[in-house]
Image (cartoon, rainbow, N blue to C red; front, side, top):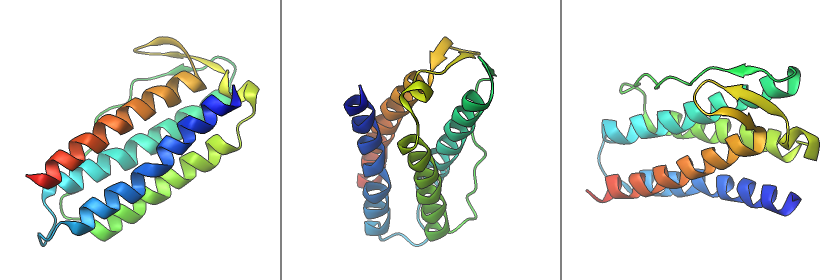
Length: 142
């Protein structure tokens, strides 16, 4: 069971370096606003998941509201957004690494999905992450 959780964490660890590499290879100055919006979305999703996990650890079967779409930050510079994305991912991964087996199986009621565990939320986040990385690569090649 722990190996499956480690695999999820490993997948999440790969994203920031890939995104930074693609983003910094982009020669546009400033970076396209779509690219910055994308990075903000990743950062905010990581922060939202971290908040949900913390809530699940603190409360007995909490109710998790659906996360809303992020607001754009087109005026922000790319380097700052990349740093914030990496920090948010680092905070999330650090928390995941320190979860016990019992924590991974903690349950909550999700407004959209119904009954979920921490593992379910992380698996969905990894799926989202993979789709976003593919979308980011497409965006950068346009």
